[in-house]
Length: 308
Image (cartoon, rainbow, N blue to C red; front, side):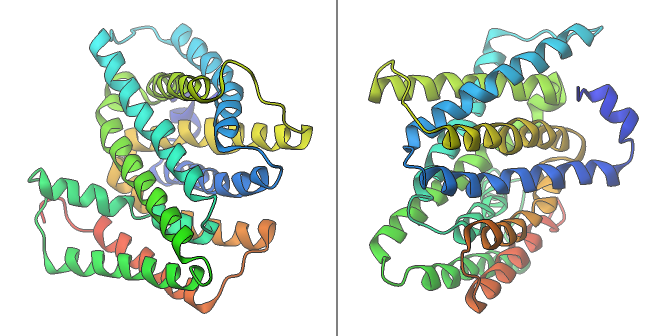
């Protein structure tokens, strides 16, 4: 079982920590592939979210119990802190997931991943608003590059379905904003209570919100889905939820939110490869140009000095 002491023993260097974040990034990127395959089975958005958390939550509880038993000096947590961690978890694993899944109903995986990777720009703009960073010509140029990249990809994908694509893009942008809030809100919690405990608490808060959402709309009756769809959702729960969420929080704790966002640049590239292999999505020169611009813009923002 992955615990912080075990990780430190097996992966003591920064390079190997970066490797774990890369694995997490690929895992998160595979979520969109799973979603498209699950939608093809006729499963609704709400049912997908519900079964995902129902399958993932037992693993989080098991990991949390093992972690708590191994801790010699346990950090005390107030009810206010539990509430705050739950709220941050709801932003990252409920709102961000809901808007992302909603957007994937109408946009391609390639475009969805590129839009989601704008979250470093939202982190940067929030830092500017809070007075932690200043707008410079480098940051302005980087922002322009990233957003032009999205525009190029969108114009390529939107032919023949403009209105629906615009709605899909809007939902994915909201998802990226929520994820940026989650990343910024996670940093202090993972440092104080530990990456594993924090991730388990955050996911529990999000799971409660997802269950309430489903019951409010559909009632307390589990939807009937095919065995193949159930297998796909289980794969998504493990490979795209439990594993990457724990590794991502570990990365935020030891590398920091900004460095993790830099490592996450592999996300859109991984999504492009997987969408072509598993979904047969086209990858045109417009996608290549858009991908390059988004990565260049996000990378430019991430490498700006903290005092810049």
